[in-house]
View 1 (cartoon, helix red, strand yellow):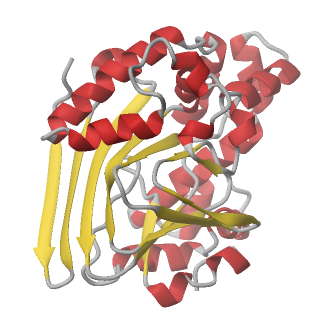
View 2: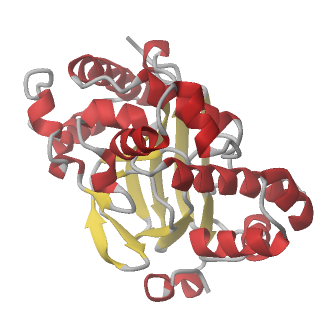
Length: 321
């Protein structure tokens, strides 16, 4: 199988060079695997990005350069390859200016199948994929690599992004076949939450899939990582960010997304991103010069490129300055 690159962007200037290539996974892997994004940065200065909570899990297969990730309330982690499950708080990723690898965006229930790890063990954490408790055992007989780090090295050695995406298609097809299937009811409930932007009440969601609220909560924690209420908060905020960046007012956004009022929106925004709605939208409009911007999720406002003086104290205070 081979993936086809659908969007390639690159740039070169006084601050260095960069390239991003986005491709869809093979149709048989969708919708569980959302997208592949190849990244190559060669900048002349360190770079920091604020990553807000999204309704997806992220696997970064790094080729060489380490990434330092800070999240309020947790010690920083320095890793080359990174798995991040669902989260309700923002993080800052930083590197020395050079970075290369492939970012894989997954539905949380697909990550449960690929890695065989209860997702609640990974909530609001970043981990080395090789340290996932069940990943290596589950795929020992379906992979020629001893771990995700070796897979990343094999990807780096290939000559083109299309070759790399094609290899990922092959690997994830085998891993998906070998992994524990996710519950069809969890997938349906998650899809309904995504469709409604987190607006569907949990009791109604449970009724639709034929479970009690307790059953739904338990299976969500296992296969999504967050309970349905927390997942709804993330999806509601994700929709709010999209509307704000599109030019909607805070009052309009609060009403459209089911917040009680503008103050409720502002409080949730601050708690989950570390900044106010206005700070976020202004920063999106005026990014630091010479910094390529790319959101993790197609069509969503997920990230901010931060000037160094705005993010230095993030790990202490929980937000950019």
